Length: 219
Length: 219
DNA sequence: ATAAATTTTTAAGCTTACTTAAAAATAATT
DNA sequence: AATTATTTTTAAGTAAGCTTAAAAATTTAT
Ligand SMILES: [Mn+2]
Ligand SMILES: [Mn+2]
Ligand SMILES: [Mn+2]
Ligand SMILES: [Mn+2]
Image 1 (cartoon, chains in turn red, blue, cyan, yellow):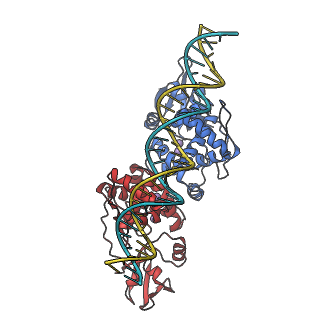
Image 2 (image 1 turned 90 degrees about the vertical axis):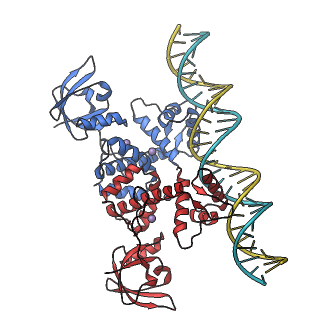
């Protein structure tokens, strides 16, 4: 399967999981920066290959085969991110960009070696779960967005759901990183802002940020 | 530049260096497993891009630009081989196969990070020199093939010039590996065989092998 | 030097992955 | 419910990177 197909299938998978949940060709096209026409075309070709279920004007769905494909690519992506993050001094944004390419040129054997080397990690540096070699995600995600965290409580950062450079730069500059502890000092309900305390600093975040920073309770 | 172009340019570079020294389209085609027609076609396109000098029926030559390209890809290939060999339990044949793909999806930034992580190595696990970031090979290769080594002398293995799985399997099974010491017990001139001693074992190698195993004098 | 064999080039055609422009269907608004 | 706006699909076309088959040039052998 080509790089174009792999990215297409992965985009359907990811958009199916995200809360917008829009897997129509037009949306996939937007994500991949191609025309809707190209996306429709690809969808029809993948339907013939039994990777996608295509019905005119309907959202795209992955077949069992398509789902396996997507999870295999996601696994490779997240393993690469984990390895690059561990070995090199690179930002979350940079490792994501590199992994976006490397994921398509990685044999199953190499993926196993990377996983083994890292001690078969269950999460990547963004906090995203890494599917196992059978394409299964066994972990259960109990995390909530910062916007829903309780005032006064302490949490551990579990996910940074983004691929935006500026966001990651901001996070990195302020200690907002997987595994670090934050305390919610105030939730400004009407203005949808959240005031947190991290590393003895106080930061007020708007909802753009508090909706993509996920945390787990700190027990 | 596409993967096809990068592999093409690299093939011209490598064939220009090898002793057969045949960079005509037909030979490049054979190396890349494509038709001669495809190779001629590509040569003409790359001439238009100022990467290759193309004259009908003549060997292909790289321009300065093409040479830089080739060295950049070779650098990435050899850095990947070095990294994979260091981190994982993979054969020389396997790391070569993986590097053949990864080399095309590696930013200059990532290449720098890999190089730095490895302590800016000058040779890869096959003993091939790694060009620096400016595309220069600064080391001088003083090694000679085992077939030309002197009876009774001791040498250090410096290069294994091949990409054949069976060859690497044989080498690995017999301790024939970059950096190891061999002693030449006998050169059978007329039959072109060489008897060596390595790890207290005696092995007789034919010229297929002694021409691709290179060594340096052990001072 | 000629003829035969081999290699290279040209020509025509295919698939993949795109594009833009128009037509058709769906979704939103009044 | 009808109109309008938006989205999706179809249609036609392009570039890259291949293929095979035939023509042209070079190389080798006689
Ligand atoms: Mn990522
Ligand atoms: Mn990708
Ligand atoms: Mn190699
Ligand atoms: Mn390659």
